[in-house]
Image (cartoon, rainbow, N blue to C red; front, side, top):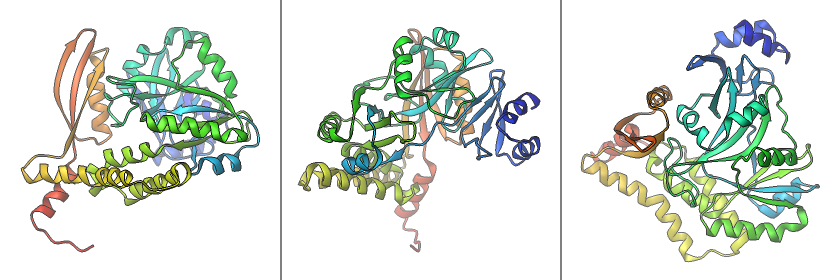
Length: 375
């Protein structure tokens, strides 16, 4: 603990505050393959939830990006200076750093993801990157159909996963690196990145609407807007199709979900149509109704014939030892699942999992059985 306290002392956290945070489990000691660190589960001082405290330094939490629902008005209200546009890739967010000689991929909640850690060397030249920049933190998105967390994925990733770098941070520094400096490092280090559309200004709204139209038509999620000026904030904006796909893939678990998940996306969809299409076409009603109703009906049909509500996914691992680490990680995250198969195919271990959704199953079963409830 002393080594880690010496790190946080430098940002004004007292020894008493640090110790009390550990006792309250606001800060939790973790270990992965001999690497020890602390995971911040609840904000203390300037350490936000998701921050990682290591012997080498602090990996700050990746900032949450504000969302706009009206492209033109949101950009006009936010920016006075030029900004860059990047594709928002539908996947899951990790921060990659070298700790005690090991390159690890941390989730937004500050867990080490064994699967992401296993696969990151497929996409980054980790030796070159971290030898030349030992205190760098590579922020990116794992995306593709064969991942443990996110059903949706970009249309151009047909199998397995890919990694898309979208940002860089530095150990012990909560402030973002200037965007053009990040781009130079991406290119020098040959990092795979999200699609970069270039620099724009408020006067370029028509061009931005064309980009959004193209992304929507090709099944992509949306854009992230990154300002040049440090006082201006990042924004994100998603397509109509993204809203409908979110609803479709989450509707199977509707009985477990907060209703706001669905209402927020319906409002986003309505605002998108109002700004870009200017009228409601009959096919949109069909798409929304199918996204909401079909998955729930399919689950009811499953439960009615005695099948469990579940979802299968395939993971490919470079190293066999990381399979058990991933199994342990999923158990720790309270995911209910079975391992269906494990086979070595070429250079990868292929492991098929089935997530089990017992709560949805039991709720639908009670309704089918005729149980009454007050709502």
